[in-house]
Length: 99
Image (cartoon, rainbow, N blue to C red):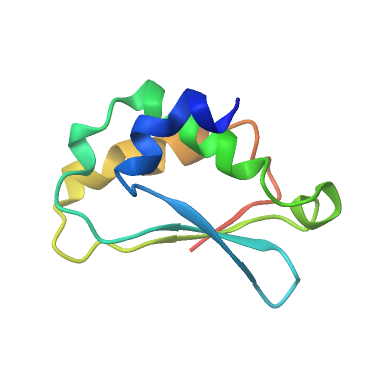
């Protein structure tokens, strides 16, 4: 997946990899507070997560991602697609720590 393939969703600022690292040295994937998570199609969200997970180098990705989902201003039903995508995402693997 290339940036051009997810450009529309990237512009929505649904999620980002800041370049910061957790205590283990793993990358941090952040879903900032939004009130319209449900507006993003599941397929687009999945492609975005796949793309973002390829940004860090392979050795950094191997340490596992820390995921931050900011639910401020969101209803539980609107955050479910984000959590479902993370759960189903093969690219993040089983070593992912979900916070």
